[in-house]
Image (cartoon, rainbow, N blue to C red):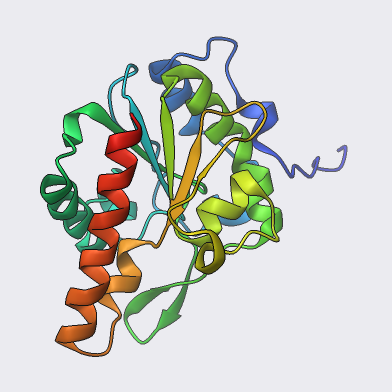
Length: 210
């Protein structure tokens, strides 16, 4: 029996048609990296093909992994609420993640989020690139460092470039801000409210750009 071929990219799993439906169906069978082994399912992006803003997070969390939908957990609910306050219609936005499978480690009976490696992010990038090509958003909002580094390179730092509109060859304008989960992790109620207001301000600026 010939050896099993080792795959390290989603490229081999992309369909010929790059519309969102075809991409979502093909992504269900992606084995481009080993993260699929411990995930319940692929969590692909969600939204209309003509969405003007694309939000890109890091990876699905525990609740997203179980539901098969992006941003349905606590961070997703916070994102929805902040989008409303910023005047952004969720139905006019496309939401997805840089990595499509939940990476986790056990802690008792819980599954705790584990940050994906740059190799895993790179392996999954063909899906994100195809989503961008299919949606053709007028602006991409990267939520957190993993999403930003997936499109802007590993040296990018959200803390230094937060809220800046950046032009990158091959992509629509990109702006980076924090991930909503970082707001939830703030130590005090005052800290959380301050970070939430800063996040909303970033979303307002993004909305003005489009």
